[in-house]
Amino acid sequence: MTTETILADRLKSVRKARKIGHPKLAKLSGLTERQLAKMETKGAELPDAVLVSLADALKITPLALTGALPLIDADLKPASTCTSGCCS
Image 1 (cartoon, rainbow, N blue to C red):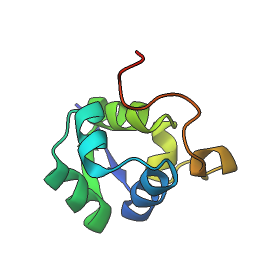
Image 2: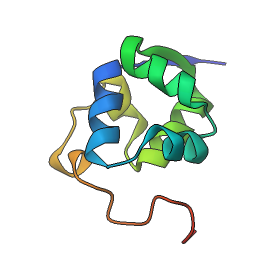
Image 3: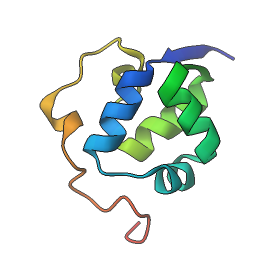
Image 4: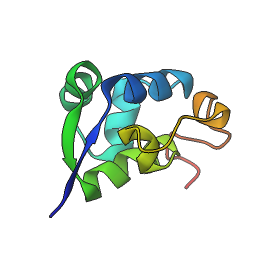
């Protein structure tokens, strides 16, 4: 199993730009609010599957969270589709 390091500032910036709170992101990603708060403070080494789940919940590419790709304007705008899970 491989892991990737996410950047704390990237995660926090995208989450806030998408207007997604910790409770909603925790539900969508399968992580706990506490885990998300830690990640936004210190970053984290995540298994690839968890990184993909988190990126999917935020509707961005996983590489944007790791810093391998730059954030683009679309990453820092509210998601254009429902993120509450009610419309899926």
